[in-house]
Structure formats: C-alpha cells, structure tokens
Length: 201
Image (tube, rainbow, N blue to C red):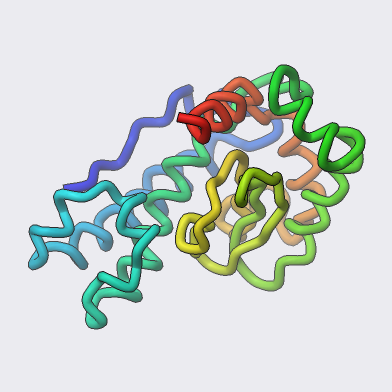
C-alpha cells in the first residue's frame, strides 16, 4: 500500500503565495484521491506493490494493459505530488550551489531559465506540469500533460510546478501567469540540489 506523505510544513506556511485552503484541498483531497486510486488499481497485483511507485512509472510497458492507464494517471499523480511538496518553502529565494552552476551553464543566467520555465508552464494547454529535468547529463525544461511523469520518458526530475487548476484556482482564478510568478518566491532550492545530488548516486 502506498501512503499519502505528510506535508513537510503547515498548510498556511506558503502564504501569501499559496493559500491555506488550496493546500488543504490539494493535499488532503486531490493527492489523497490519486493515492487511493493508485492502490486500488494495484490491489490484485501484489507483485507490483513490492516496487516503488517511481519504478512502475519508469517501465509502464510491463504493467498489465487493463490497469496501465490507471497506474499512469493515478501513480503519476501520487508520485508527482509527493515530489512537489518538498520543493516548496517560505522565502525560497534564488538558486545557489551546484544547481546554480548548471543553470548558468545551460541557460546563461537564472533569469533566462526562469523565463523559459515560466513559458513552459504558461503555454501548457489544459492540465499538467512544468519540469526541470536531467536527460543524459543535460538540463532540460519540459512540460507533461495530465499526471504524466518525466520518469516514463527516461528523464530525471529536479524541479516541478503543478499547473492543474486545482493547484491555484481558489486564489488566482484563471490567472495562471500570476501563480507561476508567485511560485518563484517559494522554491526550495536546497531540495533541488538534493535531487541533483541523487542523480549522481
């Protein structure tokens, strides 16, 4: 059984950028829903329950056809959100350390990265995610539809932004650009650096 991870901070910790009510609904309702449906999809397949959720997403082709879409959607929702929460913190500031070096090497400067990442999130049609990933040793900005994970494409996520409406609609309504702008105030770059360190292990 996969369990809903606790938030690593209080529901109101990200105010005013993400409001308490959104965090409660997003974590307790949406993330819980993905978790429950993921477990339900795998309930009759104990051999897959022994694997990590990330392992399942990396090799969807081995998942039986009758549950593959449920695993892709709900397993993706479970993993994506579990990855997302630790990436947020109050007073996130700007990147430092190894991730800043890589961003500077790949995008010339942080502001250029920020602009490209924002455009990926803003231009994504419908629901999905914007990501900073490592692909064959190179940084890349990608967007995925729905709850699709870069893991299924052989890429390793470092940073993610949820641009489903449930992530921002209570506070920002249809102003996705304002939500994206707010996101850059609460990025936990220490966690991004930890994700980067894990790539080399």
